[in-house]
Length: 243
Image (cartoon, rainbow, N blue to C red; front, side):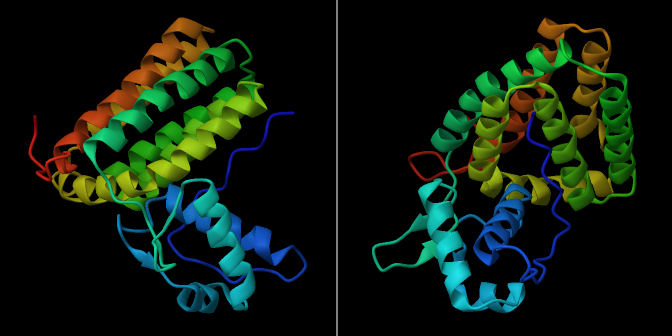
């Protein structure tokens, strides 16, 4: 069966239950925080501070950080410090190229396997996404956007594609942090169409069982986010101006 969509991150790290494996719970919590854009590019993550927020000892946090570094979601400096990866246009373009392939393919497969309950859920999420924009809540918008995308990938029937999408979103976290800061003033000015227009097209294609259309519109969604982020990212020469 497809892996269930990950729960959206609500903006705070929560203590974990000792009834589950602490290491897995901490890893999951940190992964969700990264995918939600909780941490700034280049931010140092300290074991002591994270252990305090999770309410655990240092050991499960240390192991979770090690696993996330192995997944290329975090980086370890020569001194052993764990940091959120820096951003650049080259990294952004590379990640988006991979997302276009993986997530576009998942959307195409999902269109051929759609069910009424999944379509209802996607319609509900698209409406909540737009409503969060009208309420000028960037964090809620990103959370609903994540749920919308991963509900599609789970519906693809491909655990491999869903897992690959999750891995790419982990590495995309620093860019989502930048996107949050970009969104906030625009939402404050009532500009939400930039962030909502593709979801309606994706949903319509899924409703019609149009695999080509679902893949095309989902890729357009990714490409529009890439276009918003590119001017904010430093180039290899260190500037952050548009090409």
